[in-house]
Length: 479
Image (cartoon, rainbow, N blue to C red):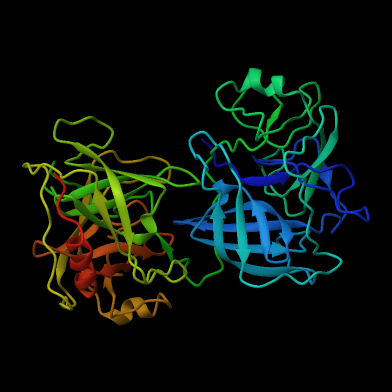
């Protein structure tokens, strides 16, 4: 599947933003492109927000609307560990003097948001500071409670996305669409469409729409608030080396592990408000798995005893997570304290294929040059996954090898691993997995650079032993 750009557009009366009294929002949805539309008059939609989302290692775009000087309304699937909002923009690739760039202090998705059914797909973003009201930046009014837009009403959709040639557009686009009877979407989306919280728009007889997904070309109806979950298009960050947390990827320069040679390994299936993803982890008690804090999600399932994660091997044990305990000092902005404990819903059964991994002593240190083992599941190329556990041997490096490369590297709580002279490293897909040295879990895969060249950064487990013991002690082992 080709990556599709996530774009939130808004259903507004025509001429929105040009009238003395501001129009009212009715609904929002996910979009790939504006079909049959045109470029808007610059800054004629002063409420539009360009939302840049960083979730795990991916960066993509969403849209949003300023509803109060310190609040932007967007879709819940636009959730991420770091979000930045640009207001007053027309061309989002230029630094226009009209623009105001503000970070998000707090993302508040609707408590009843269901990422599987795409229900209640709405979220408020609280900005770190109030936007300055100008000719180019103005809030948009909200509709009255329970208000309805009548079928036949012509409304405008605006957003940044891809054109019909699948090229990213730089300037704000818009298209006018007609609201349809609910029955139109109910007949086409019988399992998902809910008329109480969604709006059906777009005449199937017209060549105009705001997204195009893998459905027959005749189905140009838009399902508002049904966020069809599609892989986002990644964008390069303006950082020195693109240091990011790792998710789906591969062990570079490694080999397939002997089946069940690493019986402590855990494969995490994670549901987030954006899309399902995976991480690694390791069993440290029969009812606790240790992983990275950036592997958070709304629900997590742990698979133990696996070698080929695409098969239902008799050695496997699949257990849901009861509670996730992120370290209270975790900072997604700089990847500090990237550690999390997962309490399982039941105790794992110890077998030849499922064992716990020992932890180091508190404040213990590894000497540079120490040879360790890493393992994980992920990609074997840019577009092909590995199904079987991979492994590689890596050496611990001097701290300066990472401090030169990563500005946020902290030698007190992180370990630098992987020689720059060798083509071996952890990469996307290995997040949360262990660094095993002399049979002990010394590190947790945290982050590295975009192309997978060593060294990479691991969370130093020995710095968190008191927190790990204290957290696990609070909960008796489940039967």
